[in-house]
Length: 398
Image (cartoon, rainbow, N blue to C red; front, side, top):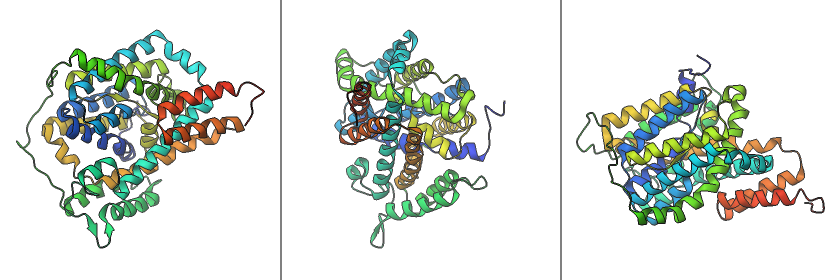
């Protein structure tokens, strides 16, 4: 039992490791698109706990980034996002239960999986640097390097750069410490820093006991579904299959060996399908697993499903207690702190490329990285699949 569910400070620290990916997109989709904070964070907490109990190892929970990025950039309606949630649930259920994902897995070379992991890691690092520099899309939209703090500069330096630099150094010093786990110190210190530097908190309605309602935003229309399948689901699907299924299950096997026997491609698809159905019913956002999320949890100390129980319970307790005011509590944490978590999570994930041996495999992996940086991960994954197959022809070489 203890091998499956350790409950200690290292697991708690590891459970916080992926907040840098989860929170910025979640907050932005509440503010920009009108999703329900109560339904969103409650569904996230439940997904963490249920997936951890079922799989018996650390399992990441992340937003679907292609849908999230498009939704935030274009301010589409909550109903269109919910339509994509339900459609993704249906598509993933079909792909997983039919065994189609196993066919895709057999056709996907190891170099492509490593390329997806390398690209995901690089994107996390770049995103983290932007949070620390104060240049992420959200920070630019808000016109502040730390949108929720009263203090924006310390002398000539942006406050985000100061906080990020100090916390980055602390993370380097404590990354392998079991007595003072890095994520716990950094996140705890970040919350205190937010209070000291004047984080703006306004708890409308105070605290109480809140539960999410069923379909709080109503049912999407037929037009919402038509838009969602073309603009959101089809662009998201290659990234989900590449990163949230193939790259994720491969990484879980690397980290946990036989303990991750339940983490199969089929079950990952079905797990995400059920999570998105639940999120749709509560007015939340599209959810997935992901190699980057797993690398983040693992790098900061998570080794068992105990980390899932802890972070899931934290989200549920905060949501039930504070309702929609949970956003105000999250705003205590400076964005540069999230950036530090992203940088170290991304660096962990990029290191998976080290087990490649052949020149052609390195070419495929770095090609995926280049295309991802120039376009997106879905395009990188598809191109990598094509090029990897072409390189099997002996007349072609790199």
